[in-house]
Length: 235
Length: 108
Figure 1 (cartoon, helix red, strand yellow):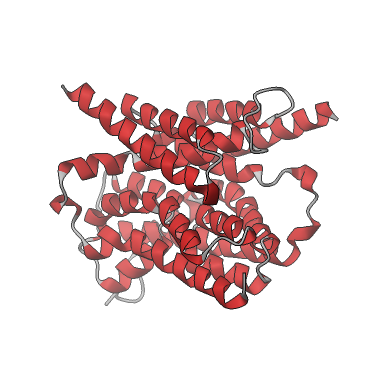
Figure 2: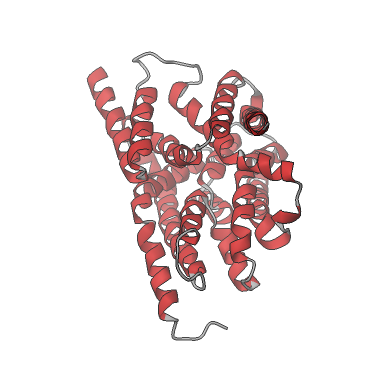
């Protein structure tokens, strides 16, 4: 059991996590708002929009699900689309798991639920820094809880009063920009560039496919391109 | 879509998403997987994210539009430049939105 009161290092890591995520929240809040608006705009009730956010806790998955519900896609196609956009969590999960392996389930299950692009990026960065690692999971928890609270509050606001925001504000562009800010630091090597360029081009070429299958085709094309460039480079 | 089916979608997507997050943290040891699989996994974020971002910039209306009628690719270039140079997500998002609003205002 965690001794109470908290170890000072645990408290410090937790608060550092809350602080480190603060600049990102400026993107999180409008993005969450857009996700809430999109759910209700797709024909879900506000309660369903909020439930979707609580169950999924992934902005892009919520948006994709909303888009597909709006056009009455079959249930399995919609869930499969959520699966494809969630594939990147496999990679995040693999990268984080060595850091969390020593923790009991009551830590690993909540940290699993809270893991998003931003939580992963900042958490891994903190694990890479010098110093004792004993309480770094508190940093991860601080990032995750802060992001979760701001995200859910924004989704609730979007689901309740979304229809009143003028379209001219183009708030939906925040979504593209949010992913752009994760994409740019994720592209480091020549192989990463190949993966991103091929996936982006394929997404445009395959845009006509039904059920947003373009995302599946494009992602797989990009992964293959990255692997090919990596192998050629090694030789 | 009926109410029951929407709830099925909500719960189903939630389970699928959680299982992918849980994959290695809760169930499997990534070191036991073949090397090729781990190499491929490393390219998932750049590929998936680019497949989401690029259409949002160059074809917001569904077809590719690299003219001045579509301010989003220009705003995107500005955001990419900022994200690349100063590595601050907040600055990149604000610069991108400010560029978009300015171009929209200019277009009247």
